[in-house]
Amino acid sequence: MKPRDAMYIDGQWQKAAGQDTIAVVNPADEQVIGHVPAGTAQDVDAAVRAARDAFPRWARTLPAERAARIAALRDVLVARKDEIAETVTAELGAPPAFSQAVHAGVPVLVAGSYAELAATYSFEEKIGNSTVFLEPVGVVGAITPWNYPLHQIVAKVAPALAAGCTVVLKPAEDTPLTAQLFAEAVDEAGIPAGVFNLVTGLGPVAGQALAGHEGVDLVSFTGSTAVGRKIGATAGAAVKRVALELGGKSANVILPGADLAKAVNVGIANVMGNSGQTCSAWTRMLVHEDQYDEAVATAAAAVTKYTVGDRVGPLVNAKQQARVRGYIEKGVEEGARLVAGGPEAPLDTGYYVAPTVFADVTPDMTVAQEEIFGPVVCILKYADEDEALRVANGTVYGLAGAVWAADEAEAVAFARRMDTGQVDINGGRFNPLAPFGGYKQSGVGRELGPHGLSEYLQTKSLQF
Ligand code: NAP
Ligand code: MG
Image (cartoon, rainbow, N blue to C red):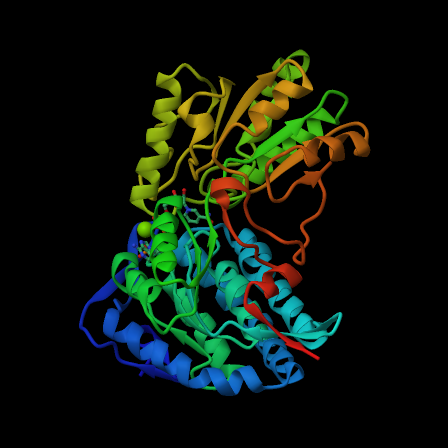
């Protein structure tokens, strides 16, 4: 059985219960590049049973042994880096250099961090006359999106395995080939049968069956707020744990005195990477009125470096392309001023959207409130810091953000007043150990590092 025709359940590539398949399309040329099984509730059930059977044994393995398996998994991801990058480019459309550095590179860092954490984390603590044991939650149902196909998988599976949980993964229908590669890597790494299981399929069928399955103890979901809300309700009704990593509308706040050119250029790069399909992208740039015209001109110049089909890939599918173009039309309708890009498709073939910059955006506009998920930056104006803060905090989201100032302490003081889970100060570097997750409707729970690990643990206290 070849992986493409099968699902990875109980340590084997197994045929799906039904006949239906999902076509995988390359969004750069719109050609079908493969088919994978469309799993049903029956397949989900088989996978959950395998994960349940494997759980007691995996939960009892020594942390050092789990660490060794995760380290082996990281090594396979390193060895197969080129294949991973090519697969992500083929099914997501990301430019090859971005696929290598980010889509294939970041999961290696994250898997490595959990190999280390599994070995060093303290799964036991003393509180007064109690000993508290941190025990694995059980079977995890992981549902992931297409925008960072491998990262989103590793950010759930690595901490779950480190904690001693077993997993059933339902990846996005648009990027199942990367998920199959990951399952092959798990197998090669010698992770025991049933500890990780893969069911490809459609969200409303396989995803819903997984989220509602009584054999699942924790549902970890990344994706849209609409689906997240539904999954949260299902989990709530069954009194099971849920982690939701949802959308964002993050602010890039440039305070007077900051290095304006750097802040604008880094801000544009932040959105254009992955064609704007990043939940934590700083899609709203906030600039003081005295520097506004200069910032707009700098942004318009910066965006010309992002040539379509080269540095900026297509969007993942025709639906997302239409959705993003619709938002750009809406921005024009509501009175925002286009200084780069626009709604017209820049190429005849492929689901491309022109890198777009809007000036004169006001906080109440649709493009300033809703997650667009495309290469679109909105530049807003503020008169003083209080207004900047009101605008920055003035959406239902709170996932990420950036603050730039002449003085680091000033930037930190502003960041502390932001209702958001992660803020980069004056271009601070990515940290794979920093907790990632949202305030407000950006979600529930945290991923990455020790905070991400604790999501997969529950406490048991013994009194002496
Ligand atoms: P989505 O529908 O929320 O998809 C995320 C995952 O949930 C996919 O695996 C999806 O399967 C699955 N799913 C869909 N409906 C489900 C259901 N009823 N029960 C259980 N699982 C279900 O997101 P999308 O449609 O791919 O993208 C739409 C918008 O979501 C984007 O424009 C963007 O705003 C947002 N988004 C956010 C993130 C993020 O990282 N925060 C990531 C992706 C998208 P299918 O693949 O089969 O649909
Ligand atoms: Mg969907």
